[in-house]
Image (cartoon, rainbow, N blue to C red; front, side):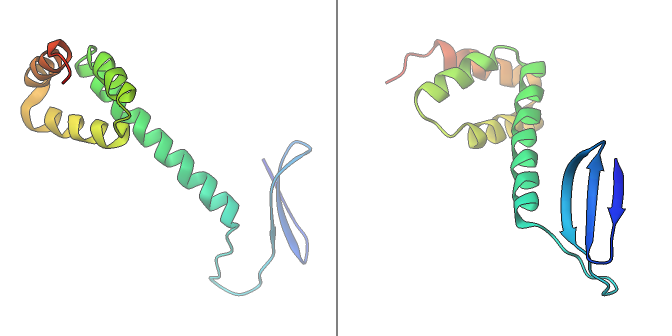
Length: 110
C-alpha cells in the first residue's frame, strides 16, 4: 500500500489501484470518514462476528449445524439463536449443550 498526498487530497493505492480517497484536512486532530467505508466496515465486522460465534459452536458441538439449519428453515433469527447457544455453552459447557442440541433435533416440531 502506498499513501499519496497532495495539498487537497489523500489517496491510498495498492499498486496502481486506488483503494481510498479523502479530502485532506489541515486541522489538527480532525477525523474525516467516508460514510460508505464506515458502513462497509461495520457490515464486515457483523458478518465476522456471526461466523466466529457459529464456528465456536460447531467446534464444541458439531451437530449444532443441524439445529441451525432447522432454525433457518423456520425463519428463526440465526444471529440471536447463535448468541443464545453461545451463552448456554458459556454457562453450562459443551456436554450440556450437546445433550440439549440432540434433544432439540430429535424432538418433533409442533
